[in-house]
Length: 158
Image (tube, rainbow, N blue to C red; front, top):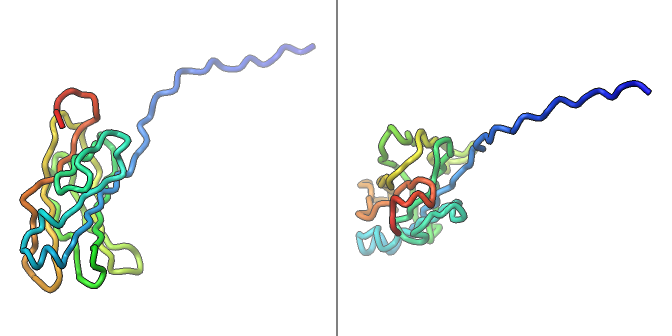
């Protein structure tokens, strides 16, 4: 009987971090925000990373858990579909992420995307600005969402 070909020894697989898209959705009540001139009480933020420890769902102070290499995607959904709402700016430390405005092909629907450039040890607040209705001055809530590092690092209490 011929000798068996010896299987090469398997090296332990390097745990490659998969790129994880984290979608951050801003749900806006534009009619109430325009009537009250207050976006803080009419902005509800959600993300797709609750299982990794994101907190503050349904508030303008969402803390999204992210790690280096994650792809972020921001979009907006109006509660009143007949009133215009658009995310027009994201202010964030460019050492961490540089959001770019894009448009879904074949539509006029805007979204923003960025890659997380480094792991975070402390929450990093950022600012969102929106256009509502026919008002040409952007609405920027006082409350600020944040990007936060991996859960369990003991650096923050929420």
